[in-house]
Length: 287
Image (cartoon, rainbow, N blue to C red; front, side):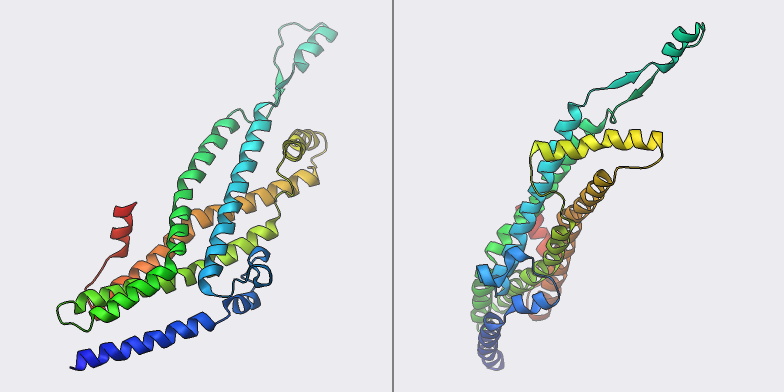
């Protein structure tokens, strides 16, 4: 009878928690910590709850990664059409001064392996992009996980034969339906704000990228001539590296961190109130 009364009390406790969570304005809380990008502002989209805010951040990050991949492709396309300039200065001097037995040449061209490197980079981007898509699917069903698994677990805990199963369902409901959106909104909110501040390019067109990459030749010439670079290109290149670093963090580091925290929570919480469940094993088997 004690377990039955406790299970009924837990139903009312979780109902109160769900009502409190639905009434909290997470957008206002995160905005005070500068973790909400302008595209996810509640004034335009109404992302005040944790679920819609997490989905918006994940969607915005996916768009940022696609933007970065398009830039890499355009840069590789521009570099592949860059002609090689060969200056046979020694041969010219030999002809002018009538010196025999001396030869050689100097060439000026972008690294010949850049096209291959950019192709490998795009392959790595789209391979790691699978984790972002998995997180997007999980976030889309986070509210369903929270309501379905938690309700099923609370009801199952009333009966003796399904008590351990009910505890595991409660752990999955809280971990996937509440903890995971909270982690995504925090981590990707920060990543998106930083990627917006990087301001890589304002327009994705071949003219913009051509002007940026074409400046590389001017940088090389300027370094050879006077040791000074071209400020426009160096600023663009630094923002490109910064943008790529945040994209790599969001594609690899952040998903591993989020999944690890959720896995540890579900494993420990399910063991405490029911049957121990391993979230990472289930996720890898599904993938």
